Structures are given as structure tokens and as C-alpha cells.
Image 1 (spheres, helix red, strand yellow):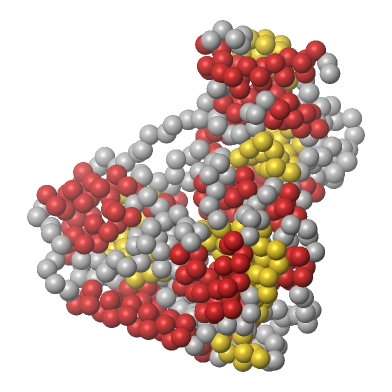
Image 2: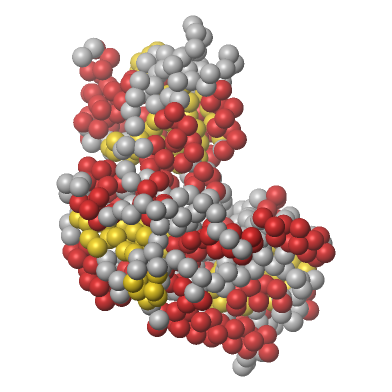
Length: 627
């Protein structure tokens, strides 16, 4: 080991003893100026922002960073989780921040590995989750094409690419590491809509030693203040609109994740009803008398009714993604809208909107205070608007209950009766709630039935990537429970197609001693797309397969994974889940489920969506509404 790396080891030892950079320097044990390599500056800088965990694959594009990580892990300062696929790494890091609040860094080599991690970053970008991505990059002396770089004779190919997804910085000049880390912190710890930040590390720059490197120049994690709207007239106009309206619907998205109490209070004062976006389960208790569940494409009939009939829409913290508001056609009767958002582009999504810029929570509180000051009180008894919406929700509850009470249907594929997806998901969801376990939902039919079935009373237990609907997200995200400081038992709800996109979790779960369970709902079909094709073109096309797979046996082939057959009815399935829950490692339950057009086989599709041969009609409606 060279003199420099002996110094690295000693520096890491001091940092571990003194609990951080500032404490080590103030104690006099660590000099503020030192010779530091770019790789060590990166690891030190991220550590100074609270980033202690790295998830990914080490290759020829990051050997120098890997060596620094090894020395810092020896001292107990960081931990690296080596995995078998970069998409899995990206999704694990995303869920680690989303569920557990821990910020991690994805690390990938160069070329294909970086491209796969980049693809996986779509989930973080779509859901506003802050994650660092560190990729090896082509050398800066330009001595000729580097193996696996983007094969064009141009500079900064990967930098151009990553800027499409988020913010990026190519560390071409070693002394720019301070700026790179500061810009990274601004993106990853953005107070309202965070995202991935891509640090591109040229292979020849990583080992460069910067003399007289000022350790105190490394930026810490920023603490951004909450920003609210200060224009009193704006809130008075909002109060006027609420006073004049007869049918108010409050629809909220991810930007309102901490606004549940304010949304409930506003709904009471305004005599409104509440509809959520698909990923916001539990932000408002499902049992709240004014809460109607999910609205939008798929959604629920009661949620969509409220959106369709409201003459005033109050939109809180949403990007209005196509399925969120039926491609802009959900607000059919809205004469006005009140929009709360931190981003002007999302704030001004609709015409006829009163715009309230800033963090939704203080702005909602300010509006509530004004309404109270003007004498507004919750109404006594039920208005006609509330009564109609509550009746619709009761109808939706009865609709779901009928499917849960008829849990099996004959399926020709299996040659016998098997569980339907709604019944299977409800059985698993209820079991998870009993155990206080978390639920991650994968893309497709499992996801759609999942957010329709979920009846959460508080946030933090159900997670669904409705932002990008990334197949394999749930099973890859399970690894977060192995990386988290305080993990909870988690069930990944996944279709057979989503699971086979990212089966690496079977190996990495064992490697990192994961205790969790994959619920594999097998219908050998892309059921959500099959249903869409049949609705639009009256026939399915290339969405089914003939490959019969014993997924429980496949799981058992990996030593340490428990593979279980889930059976054909609710009681058998619950026994399988209990067996999985008691197992000290990773389990997979293989459950055959029904795929077909029987009315009891699904929870239905509601609302409009600008896809396929529906586009012309949906677009005409959008332009008719003039939003």
C-alpha cells in the first residue's frame, strides 16, 4: 500500500472516531488542508451530506473509487452493496430514500452498466426521489475511444444523455469537485421535487491528487426553508371561489404527501370531497367521510364522479400526469380551479386557475386561517353534494366486496378454479396490515388492482411507482430492507412479467441477508394491456405466453431462498404467507391467478385516457373543456 493510501486509512479511522468531518477538524485530529484524490473527495463529500451507502456494480470504470470505498468501509464509515444488475441498484436506492428516508448513491462502471442504471433512474425522476448516480466516464486526454463509451467522436456524450433525465456534472477538472457536490446536493435534497443527480467520473481523473485540498470547502447537506405565498389578495380570491362554489373536489398528488391534516380540514370547512392520486394511499385516512379514494384513468367510479361533477377543483401538489386527470378531461364541470404547487409549470397546468405558488402545507394553513376568520365552520349535517358522493363510495365498496366474496373463477389456462387478482391482492394486503408489513406494488394489473384495493389509514406502508410504472420496481426495491438502518418486513406484489424483468433479487437477497417476501401473481399474461387491447380493438395481441414455469422451484434453486406454492384459495394463500413471514430470509410465493373477461375477475377501469383509438375522442373532449 502506498503512502497516500495509508493516509486515507488513517483519515478514515479519525473520521470514524470523531463522528464526522467538522468534528474531526475542530478537534485538531484532522488538518483542514491535505492531499486528497478526486475519488476520496467524492466519498468524503457525500459522507459530509449523510450519504453512507453505495449500491451497484464495480467495474473497470470505477476501480479507483472502489478502492477508496473499501478503505472507508474498513473504518465503518460507508457500506457498499454489490448487486447483479444496475436497474436493481437504481430501484433499491430509490426505495431506500422513498420509504426509509436514507439517501444512497448508485454506482456503475461505464457504458452498458451506466446506461442500465440511467434507465432505472426514471423511477426516481418520475416520483421526485433524490438519489446520487455515480458513473465512470471516458478519459479526458482523448487519446482515442474508450471501450464502452458512447461511440461518437464527440465530448461529453454521457453528460448530454443524463441531462435529459435530471441534472449532471462531468468532473473534468479535479478542483471542481466542490461545485459538483454542491449542485448535486441542491438536486438530491431539493425541498419540493428532488431527483437523480449524475456525477460522471472520468477514469483518469478519479486517482488525481489535489494538493492543499480544503476539507472545509466540502458542502454539507442543505436545509432549505419552507416557502409560502405572501400575497393576501390571492387567498382572499380563493376564499371567494370556495364561498361561491356548490360542488368542491380536492384532488392531491405527491407534492401533498405531508398535507393530510390540512386537506381534511379544508374539505370540512369548504364542504368538499377528497380524491387522491394513485400513489398517495394513506395520506388521508380511507375511512374519512369525505375521502373517496383514487380518481383518474382506472381510478374508482366515486373518485371520478367527484372530479367530473365538481364546479370548483382544488388541485394540490400534482403534476397532472395523463392518468391522474384522465388526460385533461376529468374536470368536466369546473368553472374555476385553485392550484397549489411549487413548480410554475405544474401550477399553471389548467386555464381558469387561481395560482398559489409555494409549499402546499403553509399555503393551505393560510387559506384555512382566512376561512375561519371569515366565519366558515364545518356544516351541520350532510349537504346534497356530500350525500351523493358518500352514496357513490358505498356503491364502490359493495362492488369491491362482491369480488372479494367470490374469490375464485375457473381459468382454462390452469384448467381449474384459481384466485382472482382482486381477491388475491386483498388477501395479501390484509395479511400485511395485520403484520404491520410494508407493501410494494409492481407495474401492470397488480399495480392497478393494488391502488384500487388499498384502504390505508396512514401513509408509509404502501408504495406504488405510478410515476413510471417500471416493471420489476417492486422486487428490486425489496433490497432496500436489507440496506436500511431500521427495516420493516416487506411484501413485493409482482406479476410474472415484472418479476422476470428483474429476478436478480433472488441472488442479492441471499447475499445481503434480506428478510422479505415476493408475492408472484402468475397469469402468464400482460393482463392490463390485454384488457386495453380488447377494449380498444376487441382482441388481444402478443400479450400472453405458453411458457409454464414453476417459480417456487426456481426460487428454491437459489440456496437460501424459500420457494412456496401459494395454492388456489384464500386460506391456502394465507398459510403460505404465514410460512413466508416466519422464514428468516427471502421467500417467494408462486400464486396462479385468473386472467379473463369475467366481470368478477377485476376491479374495473374508469375514466378516459389518451391512448390508442381513444385519442381522437379524448382530445376533442379536452379541447371542448378548454382547460
